[in-house]
Image (cartoon, rainbow, N blue to C red):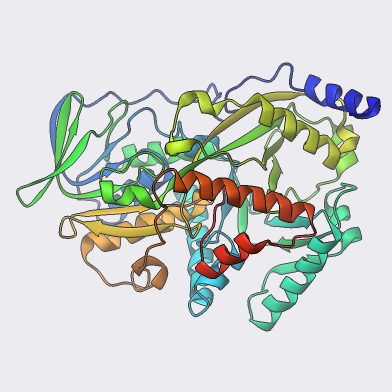
Length: 475
């Protein structure tokens, strides 16, 4: 490494010297106290397992549909402690992990899926207002930015295709000058601004607000209460916990990356570890140096991509790029901290925003995301329709989990609705193969994606084969 490069690397690494290895969002003095654990037996109409977005939206929507329904929610630790409290706070309308993925997989349904996604985002905004949830909700939109000339060409071509297909409403192409007028980075070559399809929010405050809304409507919530097993019991189901049990007529499983109580569902997801940095609050001078007057969320267009945004107190969150899968799909607390990724992200940050050199990172953290081979959620039922599940959101669950909650409630009610009629809901992705094939395939895919980023986006034979099979790996 040349001396100047070594000096820059040392400066970038120094910016991490005081970073706490904890999620910024969860380190909040307003964090609510956990509800007591379940001791003894309880019974209910609907049992929800999982206290992240998926479970909380399911419990809340169930009570709003039927206020007299008895709903119990179990959370193994504290609500929002996992992915729901660690993400970047991008609340997207897309139900399909982005329009390109949705158009490639469900072209005949894509207009309907886009309509349902925008309606879902509107309903999230309405629920936030209705329940008085102070989660710093901002309907700013998001810009996908190109950082290489070939990416700029792809974005322009993609926008033209969206116009031809009638899918470009609210989406604006920005050339280099226009995108840098929105956010000033010397690396930006072009952008696509989705003006209405994404909101920014504080993910932990959304979790805590949903928790309070559920409690206010009469949901009985037990934290530090893992669900150990699920078995039929008479006309319903029973779930055993360390100090008790719950009997329920219906059960909704929203455990996502954690082992599903239905073993046959587990092969459809693998855990991917994602990492993020948070800066100290930007000064007025620093904000002026980067612009960002409209506070949109941003993400770059590479296969190994970054996502970045401003918080309510004008910190800059910078995450993504590395997507780490551990052999055997292990989920462990020690994987939440990865200094080598933090150093890499810091270098990328200062390459994107050299005018911010000298700023410090105050927090650095990671967490596991559940991904599936089609990148977007899948759904199903078990035990003669008494159990429903949703999983596989692949990092875009802040918004899509509310839609998934309604799907689970429709399925448990045995209703045919506009949601349950979707091919996306009726069909599942291909499962991942057992080890060592899963780890080998994922490692080869990651290597191939990095190679494509370094060679003008050209996909090798492996990626082309995966494309033909409709398979992939993402975070």
